Each structure stands twice: as C-alpha cells, then as structure tokens.
Length: 154
Image (cartoon, rainbow, N blue to C red; front, side, top):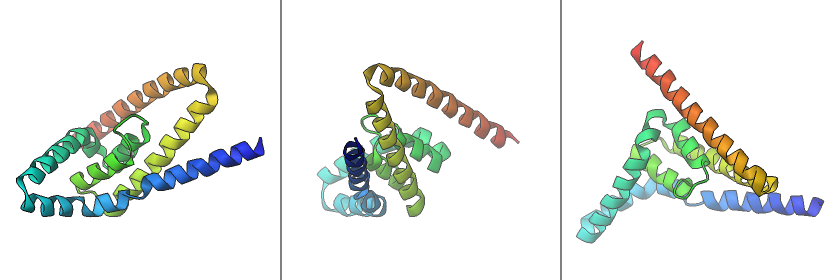
C-alpha cells in the first residue's frame, strides 16, 4: 500500500513539473516569437493571428480577474484549459511574468489534485463530485463577478 501511494505521489510530482517546463518560455517569448515570425512570412502571420484570436476569446472572462481568473481557468481539468493555454493567455493579456507563472503553477497543482481525487473516488463518486464541483465553481464565478461589479459601482 505504501509503495502504491509513494508511486502515485512521485508520478504526480513528475507530471506537475513536466507540465510547467514550457510555461515560463511561453510567457516570456511568445510575443517576441510571433513578431519575429510575422515579419518573415504571411503564412506565419495568419497562424499567429489565429492563435492569438483564440487566446483572446478564451481570455475574455479571465481578463476580468487576472491572477484568480487565470488560476481557475488552468485548474479546471478540461481539454484546452491547461498550463500551456494559460501561459498563452498570460502572454496575450500582458500579465507580469511572476503573476502569470504563479497562477499557472497553482492551477496545475489544483487540477492534478482534483484529477487524483476523482480517480481515487471511483466512477460513481467521481461523477457526483464532478457535478458538485461544476455547480460550486459556477456559483463562485457568479459571486466574484457580483462582488467586482459592486466594487466598480462605488
């Protein structure tokens, strides 16, 4: 039993760290790379425009809350909401490096913990827990928007 828990923790740690490897490079150099490639070819310009447009669409709700929004976006374990997309969004939004990196890191850790929790619960409980987490996150997101609107009106 101890060996299985140790192995699971080791594998999770390796996955967390390997997922984060490209994040600082994406945050720091994506815009510079896009500018460089766009100056070289029209094809690259179209690809970069598509990439940045997709990131801007995903970033619309995140832009409202910056760090918290990015962390929650990365923490949701759905396809297309991981650390790499989070790093692209941090770059597109022009977030400070350490803010974008820390939001991505906390989001990756939370997503990994959530997936481990759901896997250890078993299918029946995982589905119920997933539905509950979806409801809680929706309520929290709405509450955050309400608080932000009330602060902006004062």
